[in-house]
Every structure is written in structure tokens, then in C-alpha cells.
Amino acid sequence: MKFFIDTANLDQIREAQELGVLDGVTTNPSLMAKEGITGRNNILKHYVDICNIVDGDVSAEVISTTYKEMIKEGDELAELHDQIVVKIPMIKDGVKALKYFSDKGIKTNCTLVFSAGQALLAAKAGATYVSPFIGRLDDISTDGLNLIAEIRLIYDNYAFETQILAASIRHTMHVIDCAKLGADVMTSGLSSITGLLNHPLTDSGLAKFLADYNKGN
Ligand code: E4P
Image (cartoon, rainbow, N blue to C red):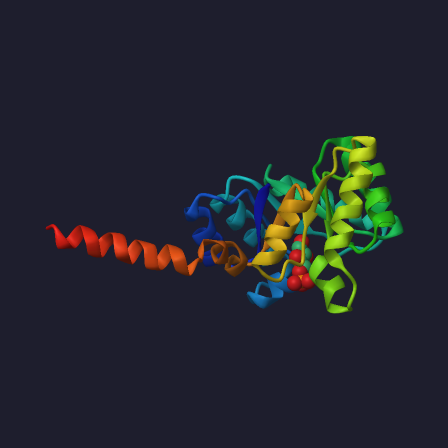
């Protein structure tokens, strides 16, 4: 399972990269705004800064909503750096844009996916990644994890190569459950990655080992 970090915060991206388990980064316009990154040039520069920290794929989302504008914007984003993945919303023109980029060999991430039917369309259009938002489904009393299971079944039935990128992860159990269900990738905030480290028996066990070592020295 690949681990992506879901943030535009450079310090957190560096921290995850230094941990040695990071495979990529996802961003969206809200995450960029949260870091105070505004204005086209600043946003484009920020994507390059992120690419210079990590080794893997970096999703950069288009803000256009028509096919013509999406392919123009996506082409510009893809030219920024060879690690850029063009993030496209699951709308009608977005499906056409996914096919355009797939045919050009440019990686894509189909975002705002909330149903198995949408995921099937994204795979048919040749998306590199599909991003089901499990936390937002849970937020409206719908089983987000069940969507991961449905997409896994459908993609395996037909050997689709589109990778399931579990998004909108809220906590460590989402990460573990997505791994059990066979999501190819998960993207989360730093706390859901570092939270996997924690166990009280590890802490008490280590304290005991160190105390016993110090008795003899
Ligand atoms: C990532 O690609 C998504 O944009 C992100 O995971 C959405 O998360 P949220 O539901 O916490 O905003």
C-alpha cells in the first residue's frame, strides 16, 4: 500500500518524507488555501516546491470545469514537473479530460468520487488514480469503507489498472481498514500516519528494556 500525505504544508511533507514511508502527496484548492497559498504563480511554485521534497507523485488539482479549460490547465500543470499528477473532478467534462490525459500518457487522479459507478467511469476513462472520499461519506452516515470494497471488487473483476486512492481519511483506523480492503494507496494528514506508531505496550516495553539494561551498567 502506498502512503500519500494529504496536505500542502511543506513542514509536514518534509516530516513524512524523513520518516521514510512517503510515496507521494495529494493537494486540493482547500488545502492550498489553508496554507495561505493564493494566486496562480504562487500556487504553481508551491507545487514545484512540494515535488522537490518528495520522490513520488504529487497531485495538483485543476480549478477549470470545462473540457477545453481543463486540458489547457492540466497540460500546464503537467509541464511543471514530471512528478505532477493532474487531479480532475468527477464531472462529465472531467471524464473526457481523463481520457485525453490518459491517451497522452499523463498521470491523472480522479477526485470527488462518491459511488462505484463514478469509479467505474474513471477507470474506463483511463484514470491513473481514483479518489473515493471515505470520510465525507461517513460524515453523512454512509459507509465510506464499503465504497472501497465495491470499487476493489469491480476493478478486480475486469483487471482495471486504475489505482484506488482512499481519500478523505480521518484517522488511523481508516488507514488500517483501507489496507485490509486492498486500497492501493491511502492519503491522509500527518497525524493518521504517525498515529500508526503508537501502542502503550511498545512504550512500557521499551521503558522496561532500558531500565533493565541500566541495572547492569
Ligand atoms: C485528497 O485528494 C482529497 O482532496 C482529500 O483527501 C479530501 O479530504 P477532506 O474530506 O478531509 O477534505
